Amino acid sequence: MAEHDLFLYAFLACFALNFLIERGLSILNARYVAARRGQIPAELQNVVDAKVYERSIDYALARARFGHVSALFDAGLTLSFLLSGFIPILYNIISMGVDDELWQGVFLLFIFSLLNGVLHLPFSIYSTFRIESRFGFNKTSFGTFVLDRIKGLVLSVVLGVPFLYALLALVLRSGPLWWLWSALFVIGFQFLLMILFPLIIAPFFNTFTPLQDGNLKRQLEALAQKCGFATRGIFVVDGSKRSAHSNAYFTGLGKARRIVIFDTLMEQLTSAELTAVLAHEIGHFKRKHIVKSLMISCAMSLLGFYILGWLIDWSPMYQAFGLAVPLPAKGLLAFMLILPSFTFWVEPFMSLLSRKHEYEADAFAREQVGSPEPLAGALLKLFEKNLSTLTPHPAFSAWHYSHPTLLERLRALRK
Image (cartoon, rainbow, N blue to C red):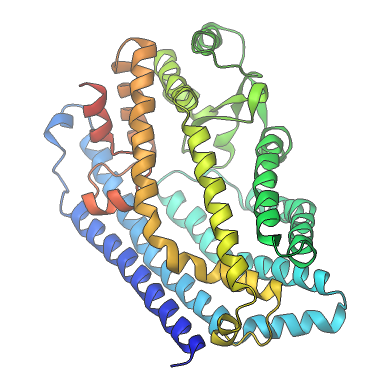
């Protein structure tokens, strides 16, 4: 058997295995959740409202049904891109109007990304205006939805095109160690985005208002000072402009860090609960979860580019997908499409690490506020307002969940 055939069959086998595992887990979880109607866990029977619990099940099942259709479309689209000859056809069309190989590659990657986004647009519209609206979460007008996409396109041109040009220039012109320089460039660009996000990118989409003076601000600032958490300020973001979902986070690097609270969260939680939520977020920083995540991300980038450095001139990969002669832009695009099929098994390990970090951040918050109850109260309200799944199948949550379930977090908090 030829090398390119062997590579193609290996990809198809991993692709099919990934698809079957993902859909199998989703079906298993949907049946498990549906079978627990009217069965609120004993520990929460006097705390969780029965109607909210039933509605959370309906929401989970609606998302699962949508996920099946979306996943089937994604699978068909990926195979079509790789096996139909679409990539070389698109490249040839671009080559007719662009002579420079570097710009040919930039246009190939940018147009492909743009086309992929357009093809997924109907799913975003359905999810936002059908499912999220049905359950009372969507606050986005169609005009805001369209404007967000236009803004995203502007950012893609302003940031994405220079990024692609610089990346392909390194691939083509930086010698045998191009994969190393490319990886370091991507890592550096990620850090740049972390700096730009709170200052330029996020305000491009939302309005950030400094938290008004008052008891809440004093409590949050006192907590940050007590924890040695330097920040440029506490801001409220108009998340209600798009969704009733709520969140809080900190963003930025070094002393430029900002604490951000959704206005929806401000309406839902008490001052004590908000303080506990902020203590949880600071816990991620103090327990060095952010640093660890960045180190893992950097290591994965280096490994990914090292593998790409071996594959990009490997003819069997191009022959397997009908890409004709090896060209960096084609190889990079094919690599991005085939990589998830070979690395899907990493997800449960990353989910496990993330859940460990969440437990540690919860414990930190409990220590800082002196009691588990403020954070427990916040988690219960967030379950109610966000219709989180209370009883997912253990296998599904182990594979996908970046956070422990509500019941798991409450048990750990109150140990």
